[in-house]
Length: 85
Image (cartoon, rainbow, N blue to C red):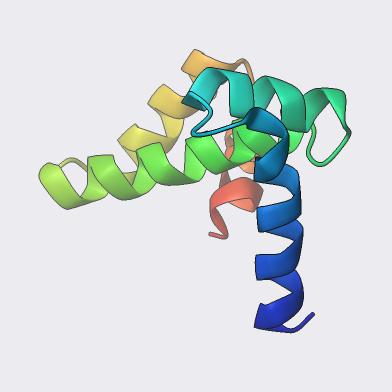
């Protein structure tokens, strides 16, 4: 998909909000319109948390994976798939 197409979709979608949507409203609407799903959002959050934890702490990556596993109720192998390890 070309950058122009992505921008066109974004402009068209955001025009529905008559100004700037708040973050929660934007995500809720994206879910309602099936532009994304809960699992994709959860996976994105897991990836961002992994990046954040590894950048700020000298903690072993396996410990971070174990903590994410407990937090999200997923197996360590599922977390590894999500973060690409």
